[in-house]
Amino acid sequence: MLIKTTPAQYSARRNFLGRSTSIALSGAAVALLAGNSRLAVAATGNPSGDVNILNVALGLEHEAIAAYQVGAESGLLQKPVLDTAVLFQSHHKQHRDALVATIEKLGGKPVMAKSNSDYAASLGAGGLKSQTDILNLAARLELGAANAYIGVIPAFSEKDLAKVAARLAADETMHWSLLANALGKPVPMAALSFGA
Amino acid sequence: MIVAERLLPAVLGLALAGAAAAADPGRGAGLYEARCGACHSLDAHRVGPLHRGVVGRRAGSAPGYDYSPALAAAAFTWDAALLDAWLKDPEALVPGQRMGYSVADASDRGDLVAFLLSVSRR
Image (cartoon, rainbow over all chains, first blue to last red; front, top):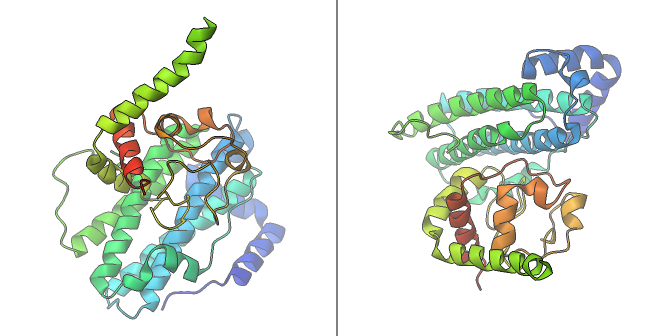
């Protein structure tokens, strides 16, 4: 079973971290994302534009976390697929936490997650009847996220954030590759298929 | 000169509308899945708003979606020319909007707009 985080727990956790360890967390999160902690204070390009893009990324991460949660709770995923789904969800939670810390460091307000039932409805989760259905949904979301992250790289005013998007895209691409393999999908015949 | 300034947008709009009509909505569907599908779907709000019926809809007006203040205040209705301009450079069309993604290739934009037109006709 996946580790559940209710909105209240998440908010409380963020508040606690914000009060007691904000410097350490932000430094670690920003370092995780961009490789150095001077990013947030050194941003001089268009921070509000960058925050908007980061918030779109955060929205994608919220959706991915919910999608894996829905899949895990469906009872349709069998081991070891379930374990892999849990691992991928943990990656998305790490993305989320790092994005939240960076957005706040840049003076922005992170978008909040919707309810899992809202995500389930918008993703058509009611039609998921098998492990293959869930893996296909996950693969579609991971591929879309990889393409989206690649697509926004040129839009960042801060080049370190462009690197962040590239690193996120790499994780999503890794997820898609493993999911596609599990589904028996062929390796793309053409090079440069991502972000095209 | 004034006539030219007034006519140019209209001519440009007609040209783009014509280009959209000649474009390939089938290819646009594939592009939509690959490029837009991370955030959008036709029939449900996700990270971005739903798209079915977008052509002919006032910008920032799909019920139930939390638009940026900039897009919510936009005073235009989506057509082929405006969708092309949006996909080319959203921030240039509506400063302060939230979409960081753009489509550089005019042919790709034409096919995407043709697809959006095809799912907007009643």
